[in-house]
Length: 284
Image 1 (tube, rainbow, N blue to C red):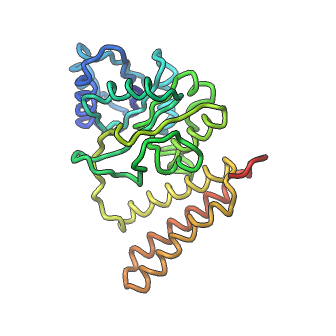
Image 2 (image 1 turned 45 degrees about the vertical axis):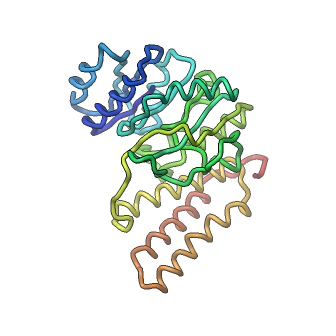
């Protein structure tokens, strides 16, 4: 379990409690501490008798860079990258073990739900299936994605230029980028919607400046990842038309704030597509 964390304390307590509730001693928790202070020390010390915890100081900022730094210390055969404010059901690892027996794969993924079990943070497919290039947008979220460590290492891990804190325009879709690299190297993935992790539900105003900036960064990341991995412009056009339709609908219905949000999604997706290098070969 590689947990990159910044500016969180109480939330880490919730995560560690859920990991201890697995009632197993066959995993380690590698905490990549990006804080400038020592706020995590008392929390980690409180769980040291129940969990094998390794604390690593991050030298470079950026969520994916921190994840890669933590993964370099991993000794297990499989790696999971929990968010520092998520938590897992008590039977999460037992469920994963059953999956590994029933469906041989090199990486597994599940669904993001809130405390009540409602799907959040995107649209997820309702049926279990092997993960293909057409389904990575509705079967993946990085903190419910378990990867064979040897496969993760072979493809170079996460791209440190993508994701939160990377200092680039490409603010998200690092899980999809990683999955596409894995599949490109011949590795297989499997998705099961009953394998779930919990996360607080984002109830913030979708039209606030911070939220609009966030969704734009995510949109730029989508365009970048799709083009760099060979998706054709024809397959990308619907992802441009939908937010443009939103601009028109929200404008005509007198909801300018939502129209602005839709415009930033469109603008971000177009900017991300243009910013990515065209692949040498292969179109999806």
